[in-house]
Length: 266
Length: 316
Image (cartoon, chains in turn green, blue):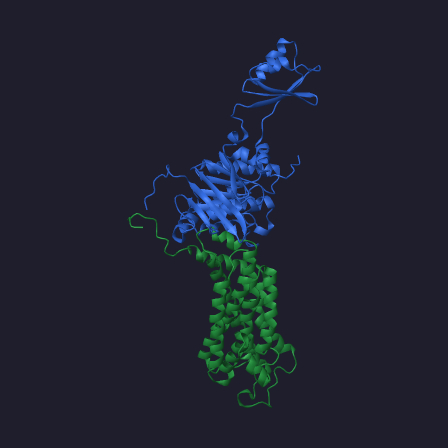
């Protein structure tokens, strides 16, 4: 590549058309009502449903220690719901789509073009991320405006903990999507992890309602750490170093695993 | 990177290609050259190694031995592969698109990956998909999906296009239309490699072809060379109005090799002029055949003869 009239060097090796690919993946995402509902609308539906339908959710607590006194159960759900949003995209939507793309040969077809199949992973992550952010912002606004939940004590810590939660969840999604032979098996594995994760996140025992031992165990699970970190930032006013570290460790390890094990063809 | 017209180098060159999966040898030893602008066929029974061969050409598989060159570039080399992917279009068996992606969206998307792509609308028209522009991939018929897949192979304005089993699952009318299309694409200057197990398709389209069996090239040449149609050997059968038992007047002719009774018919083999010589000889004896059928060995006959292995029954 020394002459002056050469073709452009293939420097950006294989990412021409990436923005078109992102737009295309976004359009496809919106064409599946299931995606839109579960990733974007579900967090708010869950929050408002619990807040306004389940009795006692909006009664102030009286028999709990300091940071929780006077809060309502529904308030404690907001940080958890934001983590649920990340888990829904990362564990159910992302692996299903990626495994499906391998199963039906979409990745293989991309491999024959100048676009690298990694591009479609990147595009999917961007699109799912937008879905999570949209779903979380809507849930946040619903909680602040309709339910009257207070904002976070330490907004900066919340802003740091949230992307880490998303990263940890997406790295699990990439591992599943990279290994599951079919879309259906990816979906099954995702669901198998999704519900225990929600349990550790405290969806059934929010904030201080989770027993101590269980809290300790869950602080080492990806979504348990996420939920505890968000809760700490929101209500406890402390920096949850352990939980932030746990999420970062899971992310690094799982991204590494995904990179090593992702299968591009059947 | 000044490129010569490359008239001296073939568009595709495969030399002693070998590819194994574990202990299974998919391609044992395959070599062939494809000239610029020709339609080159790769024939063979299922599992012969045809698809593996073209997958190595497209850089989808790493080779275990030998070399492959596409337009003088090595698809196995990471840097060269970028150039190969830019100039080689491949239509893959069983590769789908996202179910809800629409025809024109898919073509516009794939066009965006290439430096100098074709116009999606031109290809939509060329492939007769105008009334399916806004149809989702999942709603297309089998033939339309197949044409879509050809369009995607052509969207990057490739110099070489590989079409793998392109008419499988198409009805006879759609097959003929697809064949016409392949010829039109070739007339645009695209070199085409056609992977097929349909003899009629190869006979109709291919300028030259190789027959691969059990990972090895068992024959190559033009369809005419392979069927022997251009050779000296001729065979015909005739039905005569009355039993004809004394073959001596015919076997005496210099152009006749054999004369055999086959049921009601007499089969005569010989050199190029055997047919007129026999007819004239019979005429001299006052015999006019009721029916004469010339028998050309079809590519299918050749193929069956080539790939029938010992201990294997031919059922036909």
